[in-house]
Image (cartoon, rainbow, N blue to C red):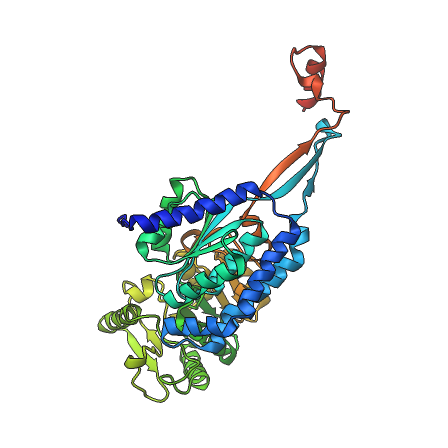
Length: 476
């Protein structure tokens, strides 16, 4: 990614905002419990008192975004994260006692979670509320100041959040910045104490490279091709309903959406029938259906069309599920589209789809399905549909993924006491739950020496005492 020069005035404003937060963080390096809870209270009020405005801003950015989905997948989990952090914050902040070796008693050891300072958060466009509020909750709970860079694809949401954070937080705790790729590049080059990026694997590499210049630690929440594995004996109707729900939430524009389905060839036809029926029940119409979201912009809509056409020309079987047979181009709606026999070289089989296109891959033996998953980059999520407890345990132990959901989709992400994060190409590090608090904290080891310590025996000038001790310490 070539460096893009941003206007000097904008860069100066960005640096000024960062320097202000850095100075405040140094002046108050360990905010008290009450202060952190007040920050979380302010964030909750911001959401609760502006719910409709937030819903409308996201809808404006998408052209059509289901208000139910915004409330269900963005506002609700954000509020739950705030409540969970506030409820557990006192315990998270407590120093953790650690054992001291017999040789160094009666000293005392502990680990103190300490705020890092200023955290940076880069937010993608697909869930601009949840993917900004989630990291903000973790960083504020840990006692940090936070700067957030919103996506240029969601300008209305970004502008609203910038105004609301000034209203509810002033200029001393939380700053929202908006701008294009040039601002994003400048943002990731700032010397943050921790940087969390959510986005594509390709851009994640550039973010990590930029952060390395300042040795800024990073958490990368990326994506990849998350499989849905349907085992023999699974309830096909239940599996189909969960796959459809997970795939069509936000029209597939979800980093943990099922990207493709692996199903035994004996069950393939039946599962496809169930998927078609489940999609028609959930969305009998699409064009004017307020609960079926649009693709974010023309560029991504055309990308999906191009990938589908390339698969068609390569010999894949395409089945678009459009129950009312509507013309959808004007609304930028994309129907759930099943793809069978898609050649492995096609973009649909190589890239994260990020849309309502669902390749279906048939397997013969279960071992083949596991080998297929393990031969590919480690996914952010794995969805297993199976009622065989031994086989479930086998999948959990023989595959590596960011997270697993058994007999459902997506829901592991919104469990308040579970961490969230990828592995390898799908990301590194975790947030959500206590792990989010720890991500934005320095676990400072502390040793408190006793007046009764015998450590003086090991100090120079060395003599008989240290020789005697060393014989004991190095004994077999």
